[in-house]
Length: 122
Figure 1 (tube, helix red, strand yellow):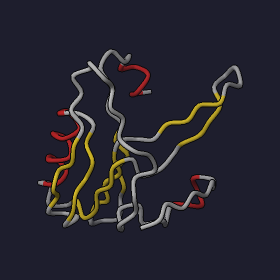
Figure 2 (cartoon, rainbow, N blue to C red):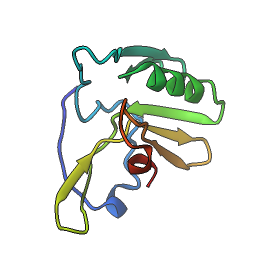
Figure 3 (tube, rainbow, N blue to C red):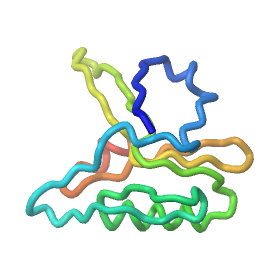
């Protein structure tokens, strides 16, 4: 599979099947000495591996995989770009995208070790 990069407004990509065999938009970080264990989890929902950068991510992946209403799951599904109130450009790749059988989608962002949880939750 080949990585394809395109920037589009969020409203234009609502119909993109992020869970349909796409690759993560970035590789999985390894932070030496951090205790973060990256790896993959075999998902019965996707019939393949889903990347995880920590035990917390693996646990959330398992929870989503065991949720019967989840029909698709992808790690690092897309980049989000925005500017803060000072005009600084910021980018972030959420940890997961889950698709539910009723068509709803869920973007999941988990805090990393030492990260202010308020920055993730909004």
